[in-house]
Image (spheres, rainbow, N blue to C red):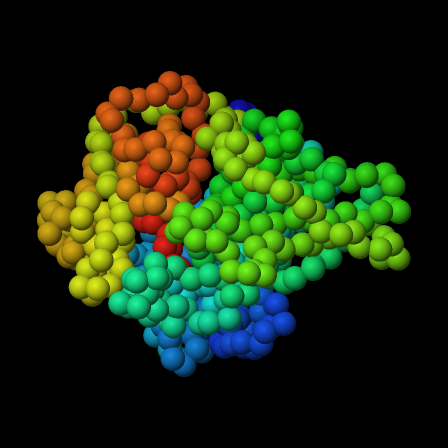
Length: 487
């Protein structure tokens, strides 16, 4: 009888899982999210690109056709581990070849992680031209109560297309002026300016906050609506009121955060939503001030009543490290202990360098040169012991680790600006992430938490370091830094 009951339960799980199929034609469209009209990359003639909503256990099939005509492309499902479906990860040069204009590719995989994710092009810094969208994986049994859901995206916007921005960055002229661009279109909330988000009174909203940004991090708040964080990068965490003691929340490019807000009973007033790009990352850390009249902020509105006036923008006079809740203090709800002992330690010294007059990002004094054959294809082709030989992968700075090893990566950011790092296929524990200008890792650990924060993207402070750990139980995934769209 027990075996029969278990069989029924397993069958029940299969019944509720479904197959979700999308047919996407990737093309150029015209949009003007800040009033400036430009070409952007859309899906099926529309931009912003659609939000994908699936349930845990669903099979997701995306038939993608590249109708761009002048650029190759791919799609990465940011934060999804792709266990057993590594070839569906979408990272050009690592897991697949880019899809050429006029060609098609079908992504087919099981979605087995609840939480807040996003999809984006993973080819040649392309996604800031528009090819990205939210990906929400719904949990039938979440560990917290809410009534409705909202998606909230924060990004930097440019009037120039990415090929031009990358060319400027990787040029002698770009090197002389730091090269990293100032977002000419400013900040956008939900791909627009002054966007209204309609809410109902006395409801708890689960807000999926996503930063699909190209360069700077963001800080945000819902005026007079405290936020309780319950998820970071697809990991449920012990609930934290991040606005307690007048603290604020911030998010790095690639990161996601799930927060709960409870709306008010009174519907006579609407409230502002505040977003600002990191002024330090954009200007101060480069030794200069923002251009006269440049606005790093964006405003949206929680609208209770269409007949009531919209409020003025929120004004915050000063934001420094001490004003933000430190995301290293989140604790995973499952209580996972710090992984130990460490089987394999990797130390990465990262910086920018002038190579032949062009700005390049380097890891351990080596820059990345794209391979002709994706790393996954090389591993499958050479097979056997040869796949553990770094030389077969070309000049891509490969690190070979053993299956199921506990891997510790120390990233020393020797650069004078912030940098986010993202790991495909895993969520890592963040044991340490030091304050700005505290130097490189000395080899001695601080008193890190026994249950460290776990996520898949971390922002490193300038001239500082981070220590992360993960179990290498999902082969053929990559770690990389985000810089000028190369994410």
